[in-house]
Structures are given as structure tokens and as C-alpha cells.
Length: 302
Picture 1 (tube, rainbow, N blue to C red):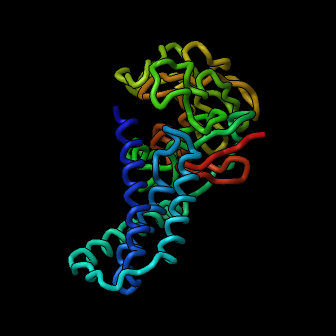
Picture 2 (picture 1 turned 90 degrees about the vertical axis):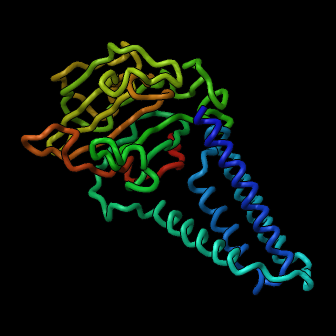
Picture 3 (picture 1 turned 180 degrees about the horizontal axis):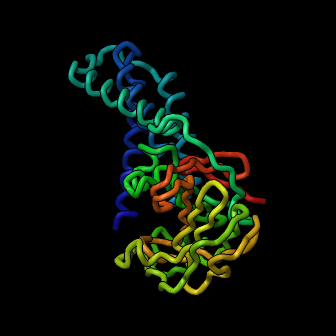
């Protein structure tokens, strides 16, 4: 199962990064700097990109504290002057991965799409802690959406339970185990509904064979753009095509229809351009209540 694999890789690399940082403290800094840099770069990368939410987001915070403690400990650790310096190829390899991971960590914040045009929306949920499972400014954080019809700024949002996880178990086939399943989605703006249906059954995780054409959805048109919200629950859509909606109006509830492995809200926005389908319009980066969010960030609604 891909979830277990990703979580396992995150935990394994987290242990390896702490080991590298701690191990670097055995030698004097001139001989250990490349190992220290590689361990720190890997730790920062994992803190930003790690799949901690599959366990709990608090595991990511704990890892960050452990990495800082390992760094502090390595600085005060007694140095062994008799140890030979690392081989040249190891130094070069450490520096290569340090550079690569540093670039990826910087791109987490900047993305690869330059300065995007922004759409200001109201957050489509009312209360709770939510998590950006996928999102960001293009590559590398939004890799999956980057390949889908130009949806480079699309977001996948899940809800966190009181333990900081998105479900009662790391992986569950029971839809009701997922915190966001059945949560009400509210209109993020004023507009006119141009597409609204929820006749498709919800997938049982991780089955998504029904594909993207069977996604329960609401598509809202404004004067300048289209706002698409998908993976809604079967028979939950409350609005009708042609209906005018206002910000905060209930639209539907979250399900797991279409090309989706687990319950979540998929939202993307495109600028209106005459003569082309809505999803081929210029994509817009979403701000919720005046703030943009990246992958693995928490959105708290009080």
C-alpha cells in the first residue's frame, strides 16, 4: 500500500538524518562538515515534505525537535582526533545531496511557476483543523496536480482529528474513519452554479477505478473565473445548475467519488477565457481569507 510505503520511507530517512547529524559530532568540524550539512539538509527536507500526516502531524514536530537536539549534541560531543578523515568520494556525495535537498527545500516555498496570479476566496469549511495534503506553487510540492490539465495550483484538503491524523487509522477502508468524510462544504465566493451533480457512488479506499469522469462536483462561475470543487459525497449536492449562490452557503458534503483514494476536497480555480473549456483557462493560486497555503500546512478555523 502506497501510504505505508511513503510513511515508512519518511520514518526511515528521519532516523538516518538524525544519525548523520549525531555521527558528525565524532570528528572535528573540518573533517565532519559534509556529513553535518547532509544530515541537516535531509532533516529540513523531511520536515517540509515528509508524509507525517499519515501517522500524525505531531510526529513531524517531534522529529524537528529531535533533529535540533541531535545538532546541539553533536556540537558539544567529545571529538575523536584519531579518526581518519572521510574519503573524498563521501565528501563529494554528501555535498551533492546537500545541494540537491537544499534546492528542493527552497522550491517548497518558491515553486517553479514564478509569481502566480491570486484569487481571494473564503475558506469552504466552518470549524476545525484542516491540512493541505497536496498543494503549492507548482513543482515540486504539487507534482500530481501539475500533470492534470494545467491544475498547477489545485489543492487537496483533508481534516485533522484531535490526534493530528486525517483518519482513525493509518489506512482504512471504512469511509467514516476519515475525519473529513461527510463534512459540509460551503461556497467560497458569490457566483452562479454551472455544474452540480452527485450521482456517483463513493469509492472504498484505495479503489479509484471509476476515474475523474465520475467525480461528484460543484462548479461555480464568477465574473472572472471558475471555481471547481470535486470528490463530493453521493447525493449530497444541495444546489442546482443556474442557481446563484452566496459566500458561506452550504453546497454539499465531502465524499470519495471519482479519481480519489480517500475522502478529501479537491479545489482549483481558472481564469475565464472565451472559447476554451474552464479547466484549460489560466490557473490561479488560491488565497483563503487573505492567506496562501502550501503542501503540509495546517489551516485552523475557529
